Image (cartoon, rainbow, N blue to C red; front, side, top):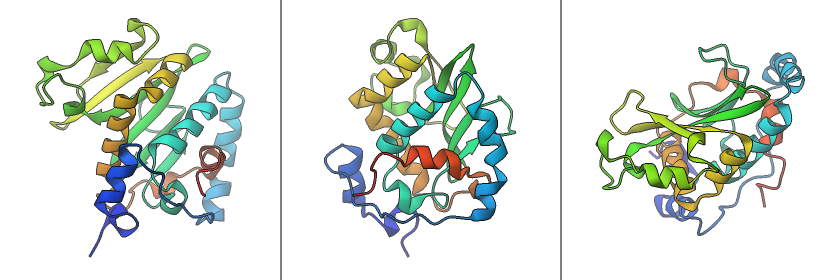
Length: 217
């Protein structure tokens, strides 16, 4: 029995999306829980009062459009977005799939910083999981200034955490073809692992913004 995204897209369709060759047809309908929608309205309204709110929504819209396949069809069940999650770190928003954190945004003064979790092997010079082979030069080319990027090694042999500071550098990172390919590859890995474990923290108000610019055909 097919699991994860394989219920909707075969492996070749997933690869074609990952490589930017096609945008698979999504649905216009969204499966919605009114209970969850109302549960997180107060948190969403609190986020909107933060000085970073517009930048957060702009980046989330790009992430939803460019980094998640068929986002309407897979909403909540295969990915979710949390608003002001209570987990450590004081993130403003966090995107998850399966049991994995994919992407988070944090306050950085009145601006924002991002955390991308990706495969280490996509950011080493020899595509290994050797920490000593991280391609620093490539990472620095993906942001506005070298000081805007840093990284760490979270638990998991092929997991790699990339911190990007500032709205402009986050946008440049998302636009870099090789970085976007790596983000998509990691997201596919975890969306294919099965149902999302964080469904109960899904904030529909944030998802409205992520899905607001014509993801569905």
